[in-house]
Length: 163
Image 1 (cartoon, one colour):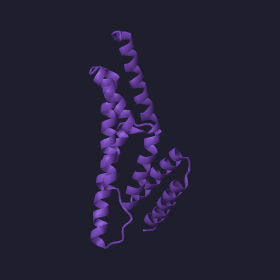
Image 2 (cartoon, one colour; image 1 turned 90 degrees about the vertical axis):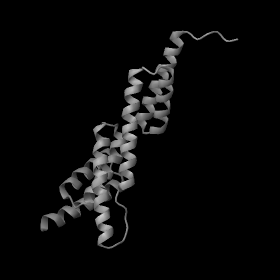
Image 3 (cartoon, one colour; image 1 turned 120 degrees about the vertical axis):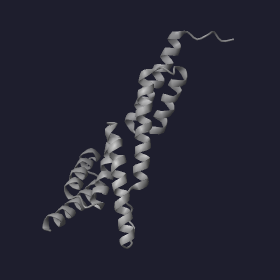
Image 4 (cartoon, one colour; image 1 turned 135 degrees about the vertical axis):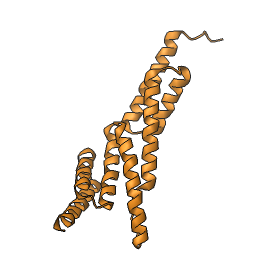
């Protein structure tokens, strides 16, 4: 038979679960972070740090999923498709703002700003597109994708300011 576990062992395991959850959160693995926070909360449903981070992460996960489901897609189509794209982009902006309000680590912010850039470009919000694209480029380290978004935003700004 194994000896009963001491309170210190349980507390130590709880802290390990919490720290691992936090590490997964910071590197961008939402699913594993949530799993670790859930496990910590099974051990101690009143663990404040796990409870707070779990709620924050679930909110971020939901907002990101909702935003991604509404992101503008590259689709050829007439006026009806363009209107639908604009409506979806406006809806996505609300969810993206919700996700950013959670103040996620940089690994999530880069993706969120890329989505903001795409939405503002779709909505022809030149200055907001440029700002979002520049922030994405800064967070993303200047990848090819971020440079492409930035170029699209600059072209949009030129078109908007010519009118």
